[in-house]
Length: 166
Image (cartoon, rainbow, N blue to C red):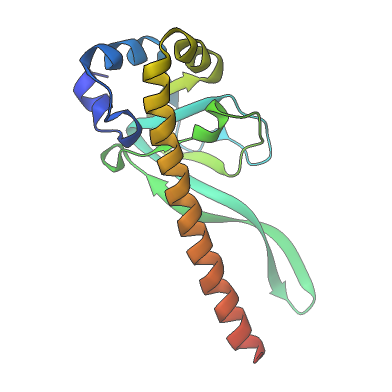
């Protein structure tokens, strides 16, 4: 990946040329075949990814009704990411040791850029000003996703309330 491509990713847009070069030194390219699992909801993670080539889908396990009294867990696709989306996923793993909040699967052969938590934390210790910049952008991304989730919950709660006549 070249430095200008990395700058198109929102959490890295605030970095100068030298900082982008430092960030690229802690990245690695990973390839996943179509249909291959990249990360699984509920497992602990320590990596963040962005899509360089291919396409991935984001899904969550939901309890769904399949008939009268027949409730089962099923995967629900929430979104898909392609290189032109300039999205990252797994960003929470750079900050905390929480479990993955979704499953990510390669839709077709993918080339991803990977950043590991330990490498990121080491870089933040070595370059604290740069670390603050990236952490602020990750925080903005998480806030945006939290706001969208809140809007989704409000819509679903409203729909449920209407459906139940309450």
